[in-house]
Image (cartoon, rainbow, N blue to C red; front, side):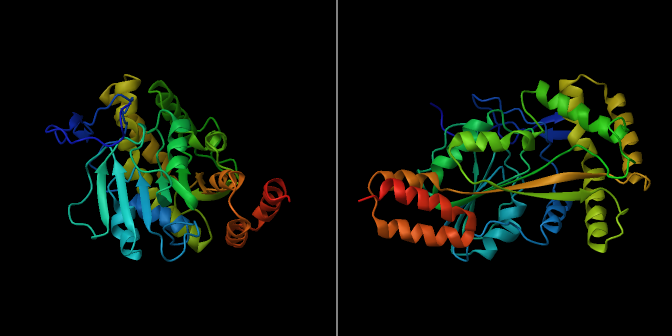
Length: 344
């Protein structure tokens, strides 16, 4: 079977062009058609996401010394290059993407790989302390396969963190209803992504896919992300300001490929659609927001398997104490494992 990493063809940077925007030219046997252009810097997006997490790059309790870290779908590399690799200089950090749009000058502990994460991974099993995924909506055709590869390559005790946003605009005060233009805009893109064989609604099903891959005890954190400066709370107002900028800058990026190539809209129709959406985003009477989800997983099942194969009580005790400090609700699970596998 094909592997995820591939040698770079000479025409890889001869990007496809659509109405002045450029798109990737990296083809594999998977349906790697991706709707997002590769000419954006994503600075507003990165800042908005870190603001949502109270200035944090991640939420997983990975400790001060992770040894090997993977960022799947790294995009411009801003998450690993600007912040993470410098914060953990002793770690080997890898960022992968099908778009070669990352910077050339990077920290010495960081490298980028041109990689289709939808194929079988070439990394060794149990090799990463931390695997990070962020905003891969509409990028993956077979999420179950991806989670299985992540499961295979994560060390026992290692963490996986997956952040996704919902593009479904809504409100709590009735200013944005299901019939509102912003909600209809969301539904149009959700429909177009499905026609492409992908989905923007990852948050609706990824818990099931994760469980099927073998993960247990999934921790989910949900965040409300306002669009605009309408919130009275200063923190939420600042977040809404940056999110509004991100949305306004990203409207064409989100819409152009899906509406023209998939739904066959004319360029003029798309521009009118974008102008209307921009007007609604700027309307302060619309108290719109959308949800952001972070899933935190710690690899436990490999440990249960190793215990079944005859690992000793000392190893059990170490893992029990370590995991119980991180996630207190795991104590009962390990007691069950102990009774099952260590009975005299």
